[in-house]
Image 1 (cartoon, rainbow, N blue to C red):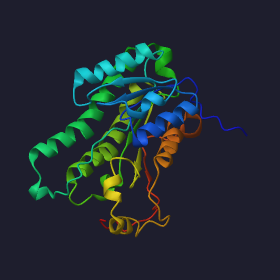
Image 2 (cartoon, rainbow, N blue to C red):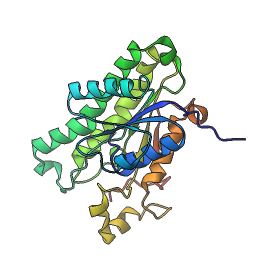
Image 3 (cartoon, rainbow, N blue to C red):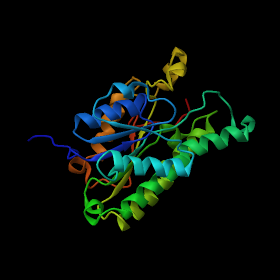
Length: 264
């Protein structure tokens, strides 16, 4: 049996695509034949070296910028976005408990990690609602959030990040999977939630060997994930062939399987 992901010529928009998981996802979806629009915030970085994609800058905190991102993606890449991968995010590296956290930090993290996904999904659904009936009926219509183990178990000194991710994983995902079908009858909404991944955002923290040992203490696979580990799962859940009946799920991709929930 040949393995066909059913993603050939599907328009996939990936946010936060300039590095880490996003960049690897761009490469993975391109290999599967998708038409990829890659979003970046300030610098397109290595995206300049990836052939056959459309790159668009946008500030996910700004509604006008997000609306323009979706409309330009449709204009430049052959029609409305079918699969939206909400991958972008920030993780403030300063270890700050809630009692000492500045409101400005909390608000900025929420603006990027929670308001941004809200604005993106809103623009995506509006564009899909305005599209032709044939575009609304395709089986590849889906939204995929990138969550985090921090959203499930919490993360001491990073309550802003864990709260935002939890909202995506347990609030937006299950709500939107009920709403999307009124616009796209076969539309799906799921979340892929990694643990620690060797991305540029996490590299400085992962240099601490003692920290990594604690992080892996309850991880049977005893390894930090690579961006490719996560990108492949994004492709699997996006695939209408492999995951067409998977909906409203938060899929942990953390190498654990079972955990005590003890904060690392």
